Length: 157
Image (cartoon, rainbow, N blue to C red; front, side, top):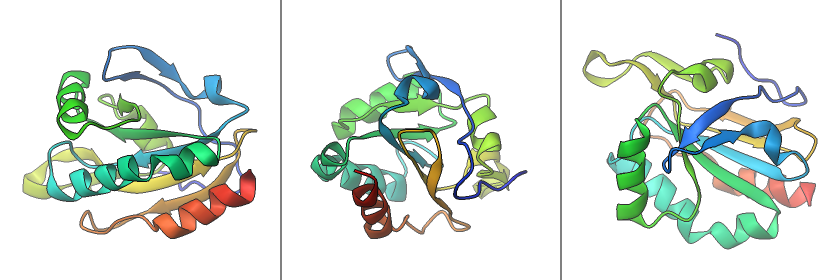
């Protein structure tokens, strides 16, 4: 599995969101993008991470950044999770694990021998589709460095 390097072109993807609409990364050229890969909807740390992002959405809007939460959950589960947590950004289903693989953030084995779960990761992609921040966490209990992410985004606007 390759590791994403800062300065490289971000791997493209097309995923379904929780409304079962196709989302293509290339449609967001001209806008900064924050990708937040997370292991699973309805789990405590993922809920904490995404709710914190929800509560700070103004910071991302100010940085002209589109936020996406991405997990291998099905769109139906993500829709329920998004609704329950009142998340104000799209959740994308990487059920076929193509984006997680392309971004080098897939667990071989996760809790209770689950295979192919996204590692908690954060990637900032600039308006030209270049990766400007990349963080893949080894432990699911850790959170991305949101201060560094916001600093990166502020430097891009």
